[in-house]
Image (tube, rainbow, N blue to C red; front, side, top):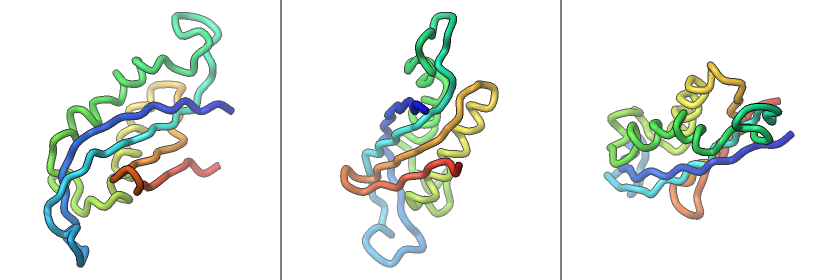
Length: 124
């Protein structure tokens, strides 16, 4: 099995309303999201030898990061925007976008800071 990984970035602020600590205050991050996609390697057409062209994947799901999350206050989108809840929200958006394709989301790695992340992987 081969997994294609594409990385996306967005800048956004959030606060953790149920948290007792400094992260309960408004603060921002440069979020890094690694998206793992599984699919068949194409044997014909313009994407021959590829699972999916990186630019086509960016066209398909890039709006999630560039238009919906970038430079936003995430609390307006997700009620309790912990890294775990943000991961779940992103996962559901990507799965919905890939429904009409032969591609499957199999992994997400979301970095809130350069050394702190959460990882989701598809159960097999």
